[in-house]
Length: 113
Length: 114
Image (cartoon, rainbow over all chains, first blue to last red; front, side):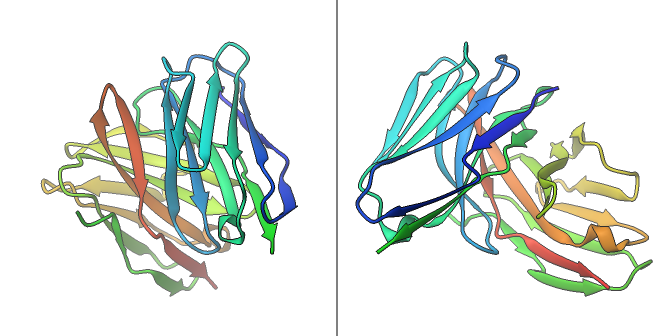
């Protein structure tokens, strides 16, 4: 059974710092891995999708890497800003059809001005 | 292109009642998935529909059901509501692109059961 873990559960950093969020999964047979952002009480915003054949994806100040063999992914945020404060979730396809995502519990990020 | 929309956004129901939530996917997306989010359990998969057929189902009791219409709009129904059903219900639509599916989420329906 696929399980996704995110460490740390919460993180507080000063503005301008570079930071790394971690995600690990137990079954390396994944189709893809997706990183999301969630603001309080809101839906999820897709940040990056990494297909199983890829090693990394970049979008602006965000870079996500994937190491299937070790069951790990990292989300790197460069030059953090207060507007980056949110909960970050990673998810993998849970097997069966591709409409079933299995999520970690998320990392709650707070960027202090 | 309009995003995923969900109605209603907020709902308050009493234990024992039933409720129906609606989701309209992004135009052209044929897959719709539903998730329940609670503080204790996080995000959990409920079910997925593709072309009006349930393609996958999570580990939830039979009180939770859904359907999809020919225009890909989807509804989920919860019967005999329990206090523990209070949650944010999210739906997501997806389209196969470059061999993979990227899911796009709606804003959610906040259900409170009293």
